[in-house]
Length: 115
Image 1: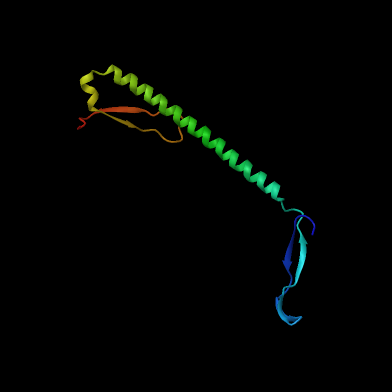
Image 2: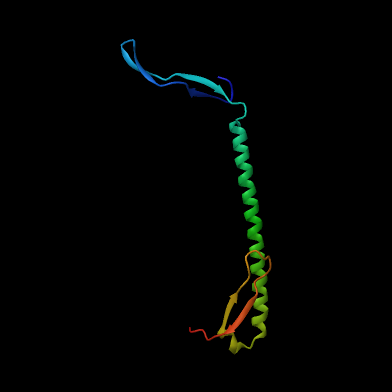
């Protein structure tokens, strides 16, 4: 059969007797679809899609890690400025929309933390 071909059922299957055995006959024809992609083309397309997704996830992860590192550095510098007796009373909150590419705005609330 030529490349990109498949078998297409053309009628109803039927039973017949052949050399003393009952055989199921299925009428078929070879169908050639020249617009179908080859297995190599399908594999290549799938590989490209997955590599693109990996690249996007990597870039997104790097952005998130960068933002988190900026927040941690800012928090460390802020905690350094506070008197040591107040450091155990700090709760850290952050609030920023996910579509904004900026470090989280960190607010400090002085609430006692039980240990």
